[in-house]
Length: 501
Image (tube, rainbow, N blue to C red; front, top):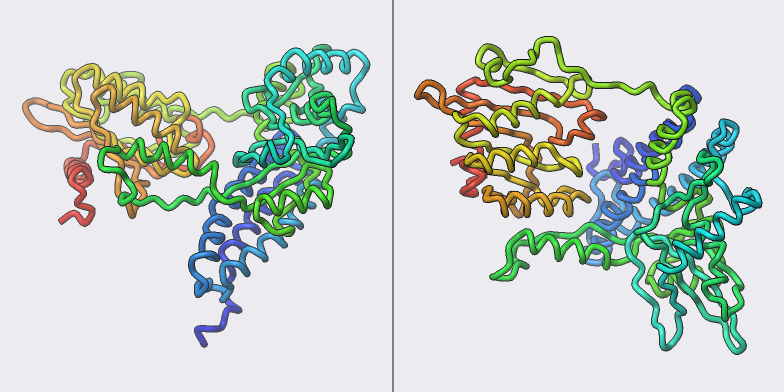
């Protein structure tokens, strides 16, 4: 077969879009409860956002710096792949809009109403009007765009109301960034299953913000920026630590090149041309969506419905599944049980609680000498960090290899790395050309004048939240050979001996 025959392979990026389309198909499945179907639209949207930030960002960089690059599966260069992605995205937006509209109607029939202004009752209109002027208007930062007010930097994935404005002598543009500090959803006081999105309120009252102009057109826009940052230790200042360097990198991410422009419900050819010129993107990188551009509000809505109407929530969601602690695990000390047998846990069916109990026991066991662990992703409020800090407070040697480059969890890991360092833990950051995905925890303790190793090996993260969602394995053993191997792993990581020589 000729090496130029691409008929048996497919492009990685277009294949990924097909995968995400299957996520959207879950939102069309009649056997999936309505609120769960809405969550699948949100997951599809966040997946696509990350795809544009990372994969399209990487292709964008390649299109600039390597004009000889060709995809070895299809023979397409970087720009060809981007064009194919933009074309396919239009189809996906249309599909998402159809599914979203259908779901909204079905949810409305169940009493959960995503309101437009035309849907508001007189009392609801009074409430929203008061809410806007009392809570929203004071924190807005509007701007006209003219010679004295240059085009502002639009943060990555931020929502903004943009307007075409008319005064006596000219037409100009206006912008209202939608504050991220405000709740994304405003619930009606008389019926808390009726709600309106924040961007719809600000859109409606945009004319009040620019009261000295005539509004000719308005819409909600969002810019997606390249977030695929190349990290290099050579860029570190001599007096700068890696954590500080990563903080600067995260700030830089919000300022990188635009890769996509989105309009919510309404677009205008003049405004589109203006924004494309200012953002240095092509028209085929601009998309119109009848689905909200930022869909994370769905998870807040999901929790809200659960709190205010348990009957409707149970009807429209999956029956909650609670992971179990296997019968083989007793309520007594985990460490004492491990002396007799190993444990193998299958998440999410088994609970992570036994592993957390092990960490807590180790933190307070006078015979424990050290705790070593690798970390990639953690929950926002992590019991793992709590017990590691507790171990350090109790005089244990605590070593943590934390991957600061865990995509879009960097800020969380930087925060935890700071807490651990300030507590006196040894914190390591991995290597320039590698990401540390290994999930290893090693507890070393004295047992009758001998060294005992307790080793945990896993396929998933030490994240109490996602461990309830993803299928993973966790093996905990006192096997001496495995323990010694884990000990050598941590030693080699500490001295940057990645080949284990």
